[in-house]
Image 1 (cartoon, rainbow, N blue to C red):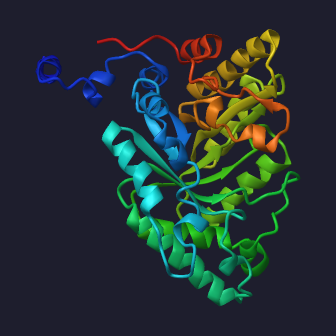
Image 2 (image 1 turned 60 degrees about the vertical axis):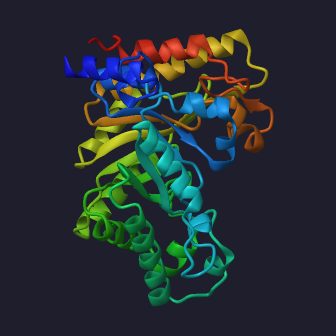
Length: 349
């Protein structure tokens, strides 16, 4: 009754976009929450936020209950020169999520890519690089303390075959850079969930096994690790089956962590054919259904919600059309409805 009265008072006052009202509307996030998940969300980036129509869609809690800053929290943006921290871009997205009543996945603290040259070309020894690593993580996690649901602490530490990826951190510190990073993040914000995040670990295989061993490594150091992020950058028709994704998720969960689908998109050759779109809808549904079926899969994030701002065409020539909204911000009904159906019934009340 109080919620109804509050809604009526807000409407009478001319307030029509409160989180309270959005939570009464059906959509991708509303269905996910009704299915017992924490969110269905989208990545975003600062350059897109000047597009008012885009922001309106992104800010609709019924579809998106969580945001992930795509680039604003990466090392080159946050610490472009040593001990000089810049939070303006990150704060913009963090503040937008707070305004919309959306949760926040914070991405990412340690990655081999998008590093400033002072770090990659500094020639630092082991002890100095550990100090730099701890200082960066402590500063950034402290700045956003209490605002992030998850932190992707380490991103993409493995090659396709499951061997350790060459990086300034691995080459100088060795595998222990991972538990060192997790320990620093846990010390800076004991309450945030700490994740390892990677792609092509959605299926059983060498890379997934290496990621399971990474979880064990962190735990062997006595350090907190809460989850594994499955990026899920898929190709139409090659998406792992629902059962394969479920069993792979469970392999991580059996190690005492939760999982999340963190960067979902499903690309195809462009222009997309009708048969490709039909298969794409089925592929999206398989991933959603897998997460729904696994209790400790806590949510799904798509890597931006519209083809207008997808990363794929710039990386994979001739491919794209990977997201539930097209380049004109128009909803693709077959994909959107497939996700809705995979989550299950609309919320009631």
